[in-house]
Image 1 (cartoon, rainbow, N blue to C red):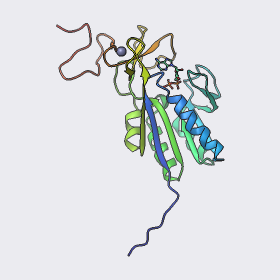
Image 2 (tube, rainbow, N blue to C red):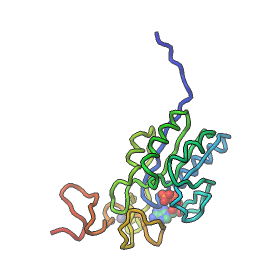
Image 3 (cartoon, helix red, strand yellow):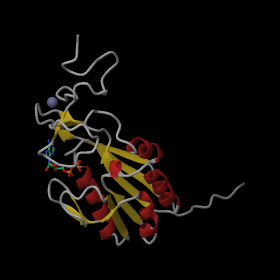
Image 4 (cartoon, protein in one colour):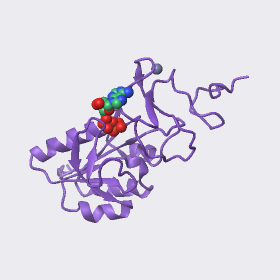
Length: 203
Ligand code: ADP
Ligand code: ZN
C-alpha cells in the first residue's frame, strides 16, 4: 500500500460580487482572524486603486487593514514569501499574471484570499476574476442591497457616461442594483438572457 503523506497545503479563496457587496469587509474579516491566530499576513492591492488610502485597504464602511500597493502581479511573489496568508483586494484590476501568482503561492503552502468584482459596469466578466475563480478551492459571492427595490444586488450600475472599463470611484459614479433594476449602458454588449437586448433597445 502506498503511504499517504500529508503535506502543508495551501489553497485559494475568491470573494466576488458587485460594488458595495462587502467584499473588502469580508477580506478584512478573514485577514484579521489570521492575524489574531499569529499567522504572518501580507496584503496587496493594485496601485490603480488609491481612492481612500495608499497603504491600507479601506471598505465603504471604513474598516481598514494595512496593505501594499503594487503595480504588477510579478512584484507580489517576492513580497509574499515570508507570509502564511496572502490577501489581495481589487483583484480585477491586476493583470492576467495574478492567476499564476496565486497558484504558485498556494503551491508553496500559503492561503491566498483574493477579492474582486466579478462583473464590470456592463455586466460582463471582469478579467482576470473568472480565471481566478477557476483555480480557487473556495468561492464566496457577496451581495449588496439594490438601491432601487431592496432585492439582493449582484450588478454594479455606473451613473456616468464614461465607457472605459475602469473608472475608479465610489458612490458618486456607481450603485448596487438587482437583475431587474440593472440598466446596462445602451449600445454595449450586455449580460442578458438569450434573445434579449439592453433595456431601451427592444424593437
Ligand atoms: P465592496 O468591497 O464589495 O465594494 P465594502 O466591503 O467596501 O464593499 O463595503 C460594504 C459596505 O458598503 C456595507 O457594509 C455598507 O456599509 C456599504 N453600502 C453602501 N451601499 C450599499 C448597498 N447598496 N448595499 C449594501 N451595503 C452598502
Ligand atoms: Zn432592484
